[in-house]
Length: 180
Length: 394
View 1 (cartoon, helix red, strand yellow):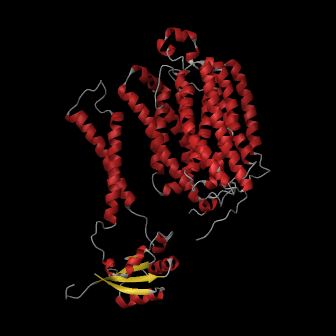
View 2 (cartoon, one colour):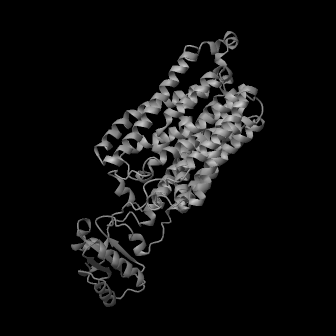
């Protein structure tokens, strides 16, 4: 680490069990924190609501890609087979919509799948080589028996001592500051 | 974690006379229809076949759903599985309703006509398969297989209600696994026999899957409406929850896409190859009124339901889902009409009063039998090992 002042990533608070974590998530959301996250070894039903998360925007990204695939696929075929290089295939019309459906369909699906996978990467800030949370020894418990809330220092309400106090009052059993 | 318990009434109200009402309607409409048998014999059998295929397709979709549900040991549908179980339980009775068709074969099927066989070598070559004896044998097999599967699965299920013996769950799987195998063949060949052979010169290897995809799509529409009906009467309101209806809607949506894929696939291959003997079938169905139906099917059975049900929120909006379900059921009948009727009325639609009276008769018999069965046993599998997991869904 350099000698220049170290920046903090945020404060990590451990909770006893999923119930406490859920309560803490509700309190944190209520207190107005925006940049915080919860970590648990398994999914907890109702956590999205407790944290006040909005429905994912992924659906709109997929829809956008699907429309591009659909219109792009149609446009490509109409342009190639009726404008750029019209070929008479057994007397069928040049703009032959039923015949264009398979390619249009495949392109819609292909771009939707791309949109879903890469959109998910984008929304999750992936790929990411390192996360500051890995600096914490204790955080490794998140894959086993640890239930954590992290409030990031970027949050507008973040204040080193106040946030720490808040998490203590929310029932944390262990609190530590995560360095960047 | 909270464990959900069954708190609703288990049985259909004793005082409800739903089945009697349906049987009454069936008797009136049936008597009217029999008059038509003597005045317009040929029309009678065509209308009869159309309506019969309409109701049996719902039973077949139900039977398939129950078997798949058992094989995959699914939890999601345990609370509403009794509805499809009941629909599938009386296929053996519907088998008797098929008998009139055997008497009308001369009117329905061109390959029964010696004059046609003498003239058309292509059809004559098919007589080893398309002949009266073999047709009857095949249909006996179909109804024996379906009747047995549906009856057995239902009898087992109600036995578990009483005894609480979870071992029955294993025997359900043992019936279902070979059942699905037999189902695939019998449904495909039944579709060939009943509908495809109406145009004996024409064939489509996809026709069996096509009929199955239609049946499974309409099954979800029917089961969603039945569940909504029960809930509106205050029955099973805390058992069949929004989460279960939403799951059924997801499958309904999925199999709407599946139907479109199969129906378009069949059309596309024939359209693109453009062989006279194949294209003629569609040619006859793209004329005048039949063309209107074809467009209605494209929009009403795929494009509109697809767009309406695509948003996540729409799938839990039961008013919307129910309306789409009604549209699908109506268009399912229209599609069967569109497949069968051009054989009788070539060139343009001509709706006969027998179409309506026989449809009313068939639906009334079908629903009457359903409610008659439904009130005799529990409306939900109260001793099912997976019931608690299903009830805890949210």
